[in-house]
Structures are given as C-alpha cells and as structure tokens.
Length: 217
Image (cartoon, rainbow, N blue to C red; front, top):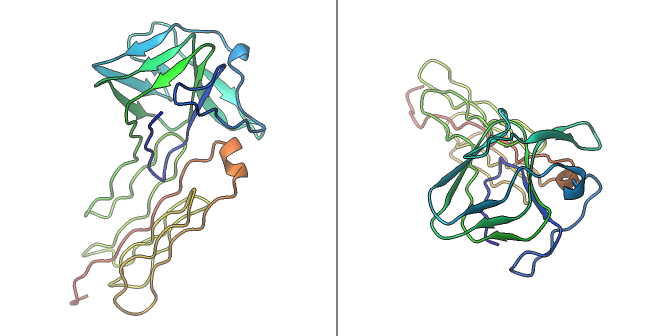
C-alpha cells in the first residue's frame, strides 16, 4: 500500500486480512472493527475518480452513505465499511470534509495508488488555510494592513515569529521545521504528537502564517 498524507489529515485503514503488501495495520485502543458496521458494497476502481466527503458521509457511486463512529473520547469519525477494497491503476481518490476518515474492509484490501489528502494552501491575502479530515487550520500570514502573522492551530501548531520571518512548520508524526529567519524572534516548528494521538484520530496541525518580506513596514 502506498499512501501520502499531509501533516493536516488523519486517515485510517483497517481490514480483516493483511494488505497485499504484507503490512498489517497496528491495532489501537479505539480502532473500529469492520464487523461492527454494515457493509455498503465492494469498493473497486482502476480508473476514474473516487470522492469521499466526511461531512455528507458520501462516496462516489454508492447509494448507501457511510456512518458516524466515535472514538473513546467521543470524537466523530466518518466510517465507510466495504466488503472489500481494491483501488489500483490510475484511480484518483479525493477527500473533503472536517471529520477524520476510517476506511474499513471485511475482506481483502488492496490500495496501490497515491492518496493525497492535503488541506488548503495558504494565501497571500492573509486568510488562513483550512484543514481537512480532522486536521487543523494554518495560521494567517501578514499583509499590507495586518502586520502580524498568527500561529497555526492544533497540538503541534507552528508558531509565528516576529516580522520579516517565515512561518513555522506544523508537527504530527514528526516535529515541524523552523521557518526562514531574518531578524528578531524566529518562528518555531510545532512538536510531534504522542503516538496515542493516532488512536484518537487527531489530524495534523497547521503551520503558522509567514510575514511579508517588505522592509518598508
């Protein structure tokens, strides 16, 4: 299985049998058991687009919706339970929605595509970048009228430094990196989460906003 997630998402996969790559998912305290959920069909695609929406609990071409599951701490998770999962070839999987996502299979699970679940990019207008799938928002960058950048959100949030400095990266599985340093107080990267955060379905945090490199302000 080949997956790629940004630092502001939380994806979870669980199948009743090992993945075809031989990797068996680790079991955490609040993992969802596929036998606890009703199957909505077999997910199989080698081309086209598969769209998951964790707010609407929908997935492309399936009449039956997913359901809301709860972690031990009461966190809502969008759960999609299939009889089997087979995503290969040129199939493109996209994600939207605020809830974390759990893909469950009561049979085999083959995922042989790159899955990208990035949050939004930061913008030059000073707006924050929204998270997705349980991830946290990034901070706001400075503008001509708003001179102070803000920290990101979440337990591993990147911290903004003083003016002229770049934004601090967010932490999740690893610590975030420090942003570009020019003068004053540098930005700092957010800390890595404890491994227990995985069982709580905590997505990645947001990096801080950066400051304008305009020496006239």
